[in-house]
Length: 436
Ligand code: SF4
Image (cartoon, helix red, strand yellow):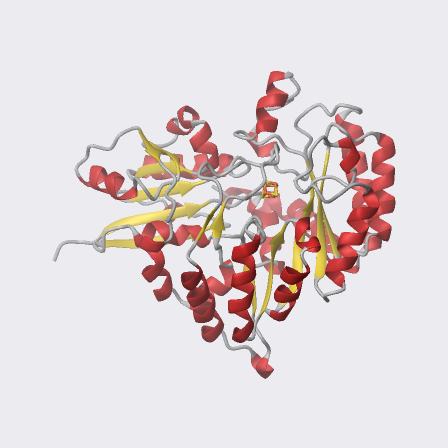
């Protein structure tokens, strides 16, 4: 009998492996739902192995004679290239795709045999056929498919529900807004069919039994679960009879739709992660929601969501051009009185393919193209408008401390970060020889 062909799919770790390890003690693996789409489109005579943010690699992992697909964004491109180099050296054929290689195909081609530019579903069957015929092209241009999920739907139904419970469920691609710092999906907002979405959720719900009759909490990993209010309301109505809890990301405009909030609550929504593009709508010509006129409107919106017993995690990005020292001081006060359940702070990062990247590059304000520093937490990679990079870093630290005091959950997160650094500092040299 002929040996089965091998496909290895890899989503590289996003940060230092030791830090990643400590993170893994506290969090579920980040969204990897999409990693299952390509196996569904791969011929059945392949054995498929998936490495999801693997922490430690050993020499025997890098095997030859396989087709290896690596997807990466900017922050994990460095790890991705190292892994790609090792697999190629071992004699495998490496394909790279994802946001970063799509934007920099020539850079990626220094580490792989072929690049998929854009979304892979439309070209994957051709690519696998070319690989088998040894006629692989250097680049494949994937077009966004309106119904990208249906061809994989049956495959998803066969996946162990506990795996999907851990990865979370993704019902859409794209977002209705176009924030300039965000890397957009080229196909705009696309939603999977509602009956497929509900069947998938039900399968996970039925497959996960928790002790003491506790309800499982499903994580919806969509960029914005409220991108289509009409779809969201139908989804919430469909979730209600399933007796589950759920969390997800949403835009703040859900606060102005009582019908949606009521339906979300009834369907088991426990918390929403909301990105605050600004708390100074008067300083932006156009916010992603036109409802906001003043900083107090944000406080009212949070209060409104909380009135439905839905917790709000607020995500803030520091470094926008409109932020002066005074504004950071005001943001501190906002965090204290916001009533947020927890607070997520990151530093503005001009990710390639975003409008922000193009603009800052044009203005000659990007200070490094070392992608390892595009982590949004530890490095400022551009020149802020009203202050130096060091000042922005100091504001970031100061606001984290305030966030700690303002939100009990934030204390746990901060303790975790301390633990990460403690472990990273003491064990990095010890483990160095084993890391790549
Ligand atoms: S609302 Fe969020 S997901 Fe949508 S474009 Fe803005 S940053 Fe991106």
